[in-house]
Length: 304
Length: 327
Image (tube, rainbow over all chains, first blue to last red; front, side, top):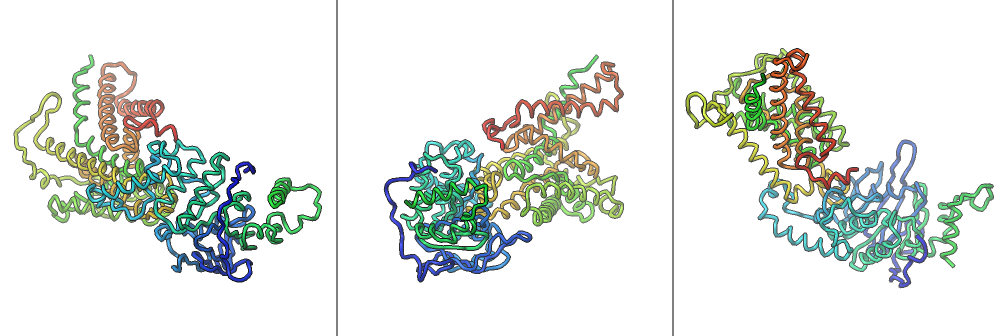
């Protein structure tokens, strides 16, 4: 995303999240999610090998890393969508090992997907209503008796409309979700995640494929989550966004956590630069990888 | 000269025949499976066979009353759905398709094999199980009654009344389910089950519930199907499943009345074409034999369905808007 979409107002950053030095696996004052020794291999490839990581509560944490670093796999492991080979991890003090994905979601850990999963042939409003927890009418036998769930349904609808209004999707509430644009689907997915009043929201590349005009609104919504007391963990490639909204940054490379810290210091970390550009990026190899050079320039420009 | 009156009145008979009701109910089960949940069940004939044999064997071998035999059939189909679902519903949709088509064939061959001839009647099938059902018939008149082309005996009327009553109840049941939050979860699973899982719904359990409900509809359809005829294992071949699929797509996959309308249209057309071709061959309009004529009707029905799928892909009652977003 280009710099003109970066807002002028500075969001309030949470600080003092960690204990001791900001190093990979450092302890946090109040962790909401703790992972220990989580590994996942695909054949001979070790996709994730996280020794220890803690995610601070009530803050916005960014999980960054080059392509193939294992960020999405780690997301899948934490949310029960994939099973690790070994390891333990806890959410709010409760172990999540061997807990199926739907139970993880019921505990208050809601995720979104890199490729949006809007339910195309359901209306936008139905998409939202599906997000609500503990619905009486979702039981097969009780669903046959509308008087048992009608009142709850009205409450859910009111809440859904309110959220849709906040996300400026209320005008489209009766349309099929399939008719929304890519950016609107991202908004819908985030709004839907909020229907269950989660405590931890995990966003997998919330900005991927979003029109710059919608970026600002998405950023504001993410900052809003923090204001409302939720914890946010997101994967992102857009460094502007990471720097702008993240309170804490965790950097992954080749399945490991290689650095942690606040956004400004972490981007000067040698391990991060090595991870993104390769340890030998100073050496002239002849043909430069233009995309990497662009990324470095962007990083340097931003810091100045 | 062709007797158009008898061709049309034979076609009109199919409009309300219990066979039409049975196919409508089986297709409604598939609508729950495929249209609403996205489950590819290619073994609906297996569920129908379990209903037919479950009822007939309970009555003939164990001497059960009607209600007991119906319950045995329903119980057997729930067990069948569990056997199919437990290993496959965690996997991708195509695995269920493969397993159901194979399982339906296994069921049919088990009923055909000579090993169990004392119970299943092997390839000859079963008959003489209708006494208990007919004893419940409140209608009692001699000969035929009715109006227009619909002149039936008391037993035929009883089959029609019970068959269509079950269809109406199943339609109401499905309608109540699909307008409820339960139906919303089911439709969400059809669109993307991972998204629904991420929202805290036990997708596996919902898919199993859907498989059982649609399967029980298939089983009840199997029982209605055998009331006007005997139980013959060859009736439950894969072609039965595909006729039911054709009916579902004809009527509209994610609709409640689509399967019913689809079944009526399918049977009326089939009867009309077969009557027309048979008489046209007799009259010497077509240079083909009568055996060939028997097959030609399926070709014509196939052409009719192809035209429908090309010009109205959402089915007769489907929502056109849905087709604008096909992936």
